Amino acid sequence: MVNIPLWQQILSPEGRKVFKLKTGPSIPFLVGVYFMHHLLEENELTSDSCICRVFEEILNTKGDMTVNVVHCQTIDAKVITIKPSNNNTSLTDLSIDRWVKLLWEEYGKYIQSKRFSIDTDDYSWREFIKEEKEIIEQLKIFVL
Image (cartoon, rainbow, N blue to C red; front, top):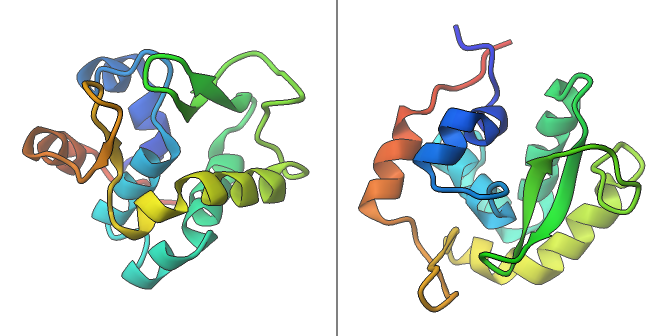
């Protein structure tokens, strides 16, 4: 029984190191991880419900942590991170709808085509590569 949700495993110091994340995972990356672990269905990738489902789990499991959606300069994309509160970037019950709509407009086309990962050489969105898939498969599913 695993007590750490996927998003927290990725944002842990070990997760950030193994995934080579400076700030946190991009929104498509996070959706892709949940999809690979069969926590999202294929049809959910066709609408913003995939982002909504992931964000709902974050809100339901974050405890006292402050989770933010911020722009990562390194990959030029929005990512999830745990940082001190900032009302403009915090993911909360009040901001979830705004974030889901905004992020779907920005990343929906990549999520729909299963391009969950950004190539840091040319900043193009692509499918997970073999090495990413192997690491993602090692993550454990959170069980209530």
